[in-house]
Every structure is written in structure tokens, then in C-alpha cells.
Amino acid sequence: MSSGNRAAVLYVVLCAAPAASTAGEFVRLARDAGWLVRVISTPLGERFIKADELARLTGDRVRSEFRMPDDADELPTADAAVVAPATFNTVNKWAAGIADTFAAALLSELTGLGVPIVVETGAGLERRALAYLTAVKAPISGSDSH
Image (cartoon, rainbow, N blue to C red; front, top):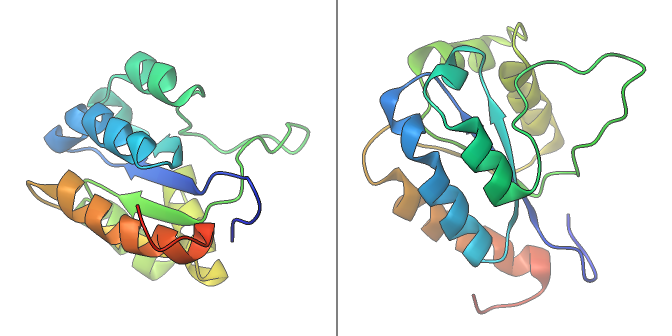
């Protein structure tokens, strides 16, 4: 978990659904709430997102593929994650431990590490997820108010 002056890190995992096209709004909300946001997309999810906009908002590229063994591990350690929109396909892969995409493998790893994960499938997901994350962030940052 986060300590000191390091911002709490939030992974936003996007799946192949129309709601992924509005991920920029959630990234803005999370960033405004003090999270350092990193975006991960399923390969098919990339068809629904605006990767350039998300990269600009986060200051980092959108990841959708496994890194090669010689590549640096550039992702900071996550304090929490949001899967939104979560699709039936990704949720089932995650539950079964099928790690054929970076997103599914990462979710399995985060689960094993005990990282809090919000799973949202429908409309209004940004506000619901952010409300939960505000509660999660307080003990991470050592503050009761956000």
C-alpha cells in the first residue's frame, strides 16, 4: 500500500464495451480525487477507447499487451483497481484464471495480492466506483477526508 508522499495508484482496466468510450471522464474524476491513474485495456477494448486522450490524461501510455522479459516494469504498484466496464468475457477469464490477455492476467495477480478491485458493468459506474475508491483511499493515504 501507499505510504509517505507517494500518490495512491489506481489501475483502470477497460473491456470491449461501449461504456469504455467514456473512460476519460472516470480518469479525470479519479485524478481529481488524488489518484495516480494507469489504464490497461483488453485487446478488443482498444477498439472502444480513445487511447491518445487517456495517455494525455494519465501521462502514460495505455497498456494492452504483456511486456517482454527484457522490458522494464513501468507500472507502479497498484493500491486499487477498477474494471469498468467489466465484460462477461473478461470476468469469466479472471474467475477461471485464464491469463491469455494482459488485463485478465493482471486482475488475477492483483486478486492474489489482495488489492481492492471494483467491478462495474453498467451506467453510472464512474460515480459508484469513485465513491468506493474514496473509502479505500483514506487508509492508504493515512487521511480520513477526501
